Image 1: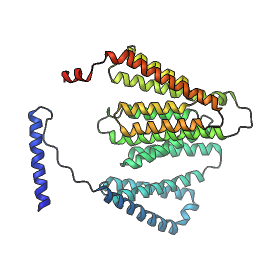
Image 2: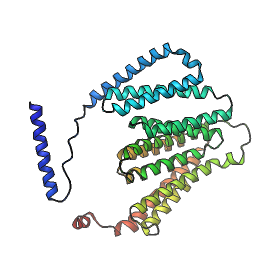
Image 3: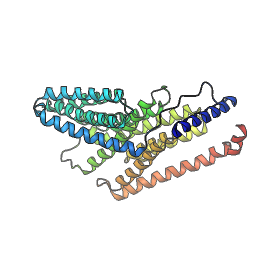
Image 4: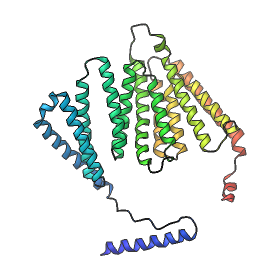
Length: 372
């Protein structure tokens, strides 16, 4: 009784507040329907863990009973696809239940492993392996779009990016990977609010692409610095890192131009010119450390969207890449110190230019408040 009375009083209070907002002209229409109360986080965590435990035991039992599936490539692919279909149906029908959601996620991931096991067991030659990675990337893209769950979309986007990178590595074009993935992630964030009702689909996919870009870039840099190449490198292999860094710089310039246009600022104006010159200078200074360009681009997108999570990812990735770059073995300590010092000088000069030529002409907070 007390709970019912509390809900009625709360609804009455909401109605009064909505009427006051209507009178002030701040809202319009009817009072939105009250949403169902959400379970406490610890209850959801406990139900999620229970769902994963139940799914693991069920899959272990089914795996023991259907061990013959692993011996057949076609059967593994078919059973994996059916399992993913069942997970999709569960996520569509029981998305509000934490136990069912986590149970469906566990089933879907197990089905994906079984599906990938069957696909890669069918690859015996290099061209078939490339096709397997490409097929896996396409399947993960479809799952990222269709699966009605943010965690699943995030994981599928990450796996799709990793599989696409493996395709590029197999065809000797790994330097294209970080730039293409960063461009896709930036496009997702720049269009976050342009498609009504699709933000719930775009955001987890964009998060997955961002983290995939950071991890792939750092992994590629570490692999390059630790791998000894006994043969003479080709012309493309010699200049590939520089081309990849320039492509990352082009993505950064595109993001800066897009944000300037969205903010109604002229590219040829004083502020726009300083931003473009700064992005270009940052790209040239960090040619030997392209991960810095990635971190700055993510940080810029996060700050422009007031997204604390994305901003934090940008800060952490920037610091992590500077730390990793400083301890690479294929570059001398003097060269690394010079690159970081030049980067610091460029950033300080940009800050001085902004405060010297832009800040004095911008309106103060008191002036802005007087216009509201």
